[in-house]
Length: 536
Image 1 (cartoon, rainbow, N blue to C red):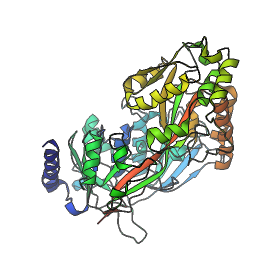
Image 2 (image 1 turned 90 degrees about the vertical axis):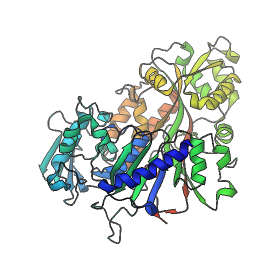
Image 3 (image 1 turned 135 degrees about the vertical axis):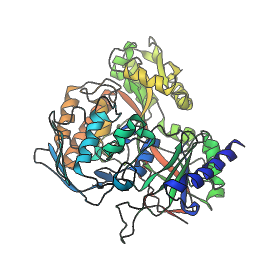
């Protein structure tokens, strides 16, 4: 009865909400469940996947990524970078309009100009707004006039020091353009009254119950044949918090897509080697590809309570003690790639397992390293406490057993994710499980985790190495991707040698879609792009 009620509510919202906010035709509506909920529709707070997914439908920025994670134009037709790498000049389209809203003249969306980007970017850096995206510009932009409107269609961004991945950062939903009139009218309530330029606009959002978007008839992007995007009429989101029930309703035709594999339905959906079970192949399409995510264990390199961890031979022993291939096979049905290189995941521009050779399973080598460190057979070694989120208990139990087999005693301490993250920021835990999902398509994002000029986040290990820092700073000034990647290899090899982390696996993106859905792009960032989707 609970879920029947939710479906009834969704239909009611479609019928009633569309009377005054645009029509959504039932035959071409993409239906999706977001179990984690959506916290905001304000791009200045697009810190999690659900918010990014929704903001990607409602807004646009200067640049965007294509299916291959190349940075391509969006509202900016093109851009240039000055010879010193400090000035980015963007040449804007003149045919992009905000969604219709009563605050605009005659209720019609006005044209976007460079001044709107000055306002939107200043908003991200405004301490009063407290945007979770302030890190994009902190320490990078010029102290005076970092954002400038040369005229209506030319916008300039000035940096304090060169930052080669800047174009990639500007593809993030944080950098979406917003209208000052609407933001200032609603204030903090702009989070539930979004107005952007995107392919869809809001019909209604009843938090924790349903969210409905409708097609933006004035959207500026067109396909190769000149037809206006998007093709579908709307998007209908529900918020069932039970992933098992979500997958069941997907199989029954209630949803058009399920992203990711939850342990509640993993064995039901997948074979032991990670393939879709035969009974679902008639109605379901399953896609797998590298995901910009590295799962790892981290050691705090400062203020350690456990003195043994200060010896890198002990940290190296931990790396050798874990059978990553077995872990992937038995705990994840083969989903994911064992981390046999460094922190940069497979599929990224700095990944090369031949140049950056990581750790393989060698328990004898682990025991030998412990002996060299003065702990033969683990004798005299203080037990190590491994902190983790309860969602990963099967993984941490496996790790604890693996380490104990070589003489390292482990105590697993489970804490809610928010508490653990705070403890990591405050440097209160010696040994922890974590994952790093790339924010933008450049390997620098993974190597920033070890730059001593940054605090936590992203440097949760508080790693400090002078040579590493010099290489990182040189990579930011690199003029070509090839030059930057050469520095990335060197930095990743330092991470392997010093072992502030234990790379476990490079995650894979798994997505299930119903066969009535066509042309739904999939990319390694797992960014939901519905403007090109077609519904049968």
